[in-house]
Amino acid sequence: MKQKKFYVNLYILIPVIFTGIMLLGIIVTYQFFPAHSVSESSSTNIYILAIFFGSIAFIASYFMMRFFLKPLVDFVEKTQQMPIFSTEETKKKADITDDFSQINQVFESVTNILSNVEARELFPHIIGSSAAMRNVFTQIIKVAPTDSTVLITGESGTGKELIASSIVKHSLRKEKPFVTINCVAIPEGLLESELFGHEKGSFTGAMARKIGKFEIANGGTVFLDEIGDMPLSIQAKVLRALQEKEFERVGGTKPIHVDIRVIAATNKDLSQLIKEGRFREDLYFRLNVFSILLPPLRDRREDISILADYFLKNSPKQAKLSTAALQVLIGHNWSGNIRELKNVLERASIMSEDGVIDAYHLPEEIRQGVNITTGSSKENLPLDDRMNLMEKEMIISALKETGGVQVKAAGILGINQRSLWHRIKKHEIDVDIFKNLQ
Image 1 (cartoon, rainbow, N blue to C red):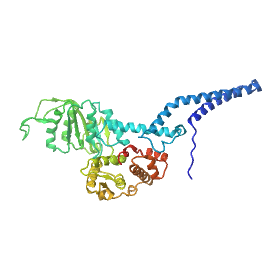
Image 2 (image 1 turned 45 degrees about the vertical axis):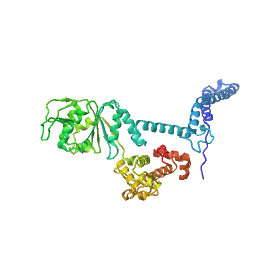
Image 3 (image 1 turned 135 degrees about the vertical axis):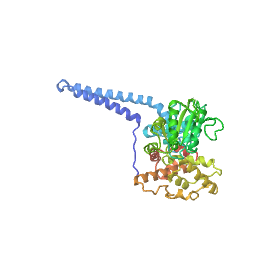
């Protein structure tokens, strides 16, 4: 049996509360008078005064609430009628003051949309609007205008270089050189020369003077990618260059002064490398002035739909995902993160027929361990975690199918819209990312 809910209009509830407080004050005051000093007629007069002032308080509170709440009510009602918010339920005539949760829902939606708009305007090249990514964007905005050294950590394939580029684009050095150095791609014997340059004849094959990356980046930013793979022999020289803002070319004797900002990135646990004696602790502290941790894709599953849509639109063969295929993608753990997702979708789009990617177009290793019906993982998760994962993925599937229209998604799931809204809030699902997927 469906439980009925009753709501008291705020215009009535709040004046009643104020009136009750006033009457309670009068009654308490009356009780403190000595009994022998209060006549029967005085007692009657006190009750008459209580009723009189109580009525005045109620009427005054009512009109004050009408005055102060009207702008809020008008804002909520107008907002609900906007296409980006409106649904079949919100189009129905109703006094929103009967249910305060509607006001809360509208403000939550407005805040979420403004946050997403800000993210898309400031970071158009970064695909993702989940709560985890919005937290990263906030950190970028805070640190970008400074000259602080930034250490970006995260698993391989999460987009650390893209974050570094975004920091530079929002920094005061955005018009200056931005030089990237991949510490793992350059052989140890050449890395020092690549960083600091060398003089002619400093070693076999040094036929001419070479300007290093640090010198080229003077006035701008150096991005040391995969810093965890930098050889110990080079780390000490990099530390001195960061601390003293000067270095010498290989084979040179003259100090070269530079003004650079350093951003470093790694997919390794530098604390563990320090314990193993493979990374200098003093260099770690010099780099880790401001740290940004990029979340893996499995911790921002709500971004998978929008990432998939972006990759498929830019794929050599354009295609769309079926609901079953999306459920499989959401259920996968993505050890290779965004890079793995991109490659899987490119392959699946080539394999698809009629421009639709179904579950069987995905690689076997992606489909293994995922239930196509619910998208839930078969790993040994606790029951509560498994149920939450299943619920979240079913909601995402329904939202994708309905293009983000919550009232239709609620119908598919067999629950009312208010219940769906609370579940969306609980799982931190961004509804807006589904509105352009149909």
